[in-house]
Image (tube, rainbow, N blue to C red; front, side, top):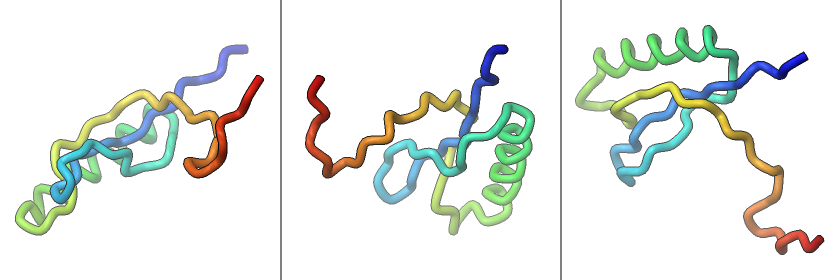
Amino acid sequence: MTKEPRYVVTAVNRLTGEREAISRPHSRWKTEELLIRARRDNSRHRNQACYALHRMERYEGQEGTLPFAPPHEK
């Protein structure tokens, strides 16, 4: 049994200029629905939108370490 890949919606933050994940990881079909909704909402409020250039990307998961935790030695 293979684990289904997860996807997130990402967009460029207009304040910082960096691409950020703006959704939690979901299945492909659910992420496509979220992407369509985000693009539609962005087109309605283009001048006031916080994010631009929405895109669906594969989620690569994180190891679960906290940014302030010391590195784990093996």
